[in-house]
Length: 105
Image 1 (cartoon, rainbow, N blue to C red):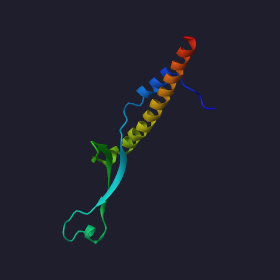
Image 2: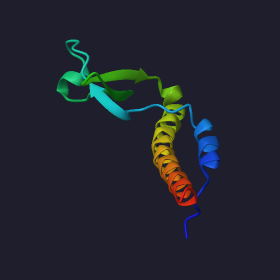
Image 3: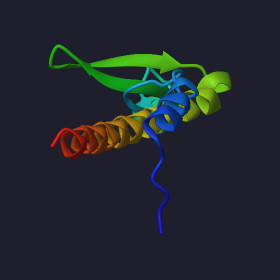
Image 4: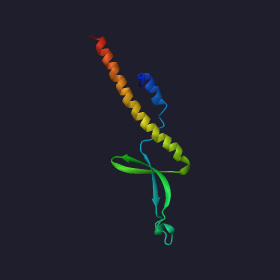
């Protein structure tokens, strides 16, 4: 059976995950356009890592150097954790509201 955490425990977990990044990591292969380059025969350059995210309805891309790819993956995973914590905090708030209602009768 899954343990139900208190609101305070959930908020503490939230504070430990504030380094999150919203988006997705994508790998892109490209051609450079130089005449005679092997990419002109289909051997594309890459992969290059990018974060893809939406801003005002438009897709934005941010280049991620290879050395930072692992750190960025962790930050993307933290976003999923934060979303789940928000859902759980909302449920904890509803439980508190119900308890106040029962005590107020």
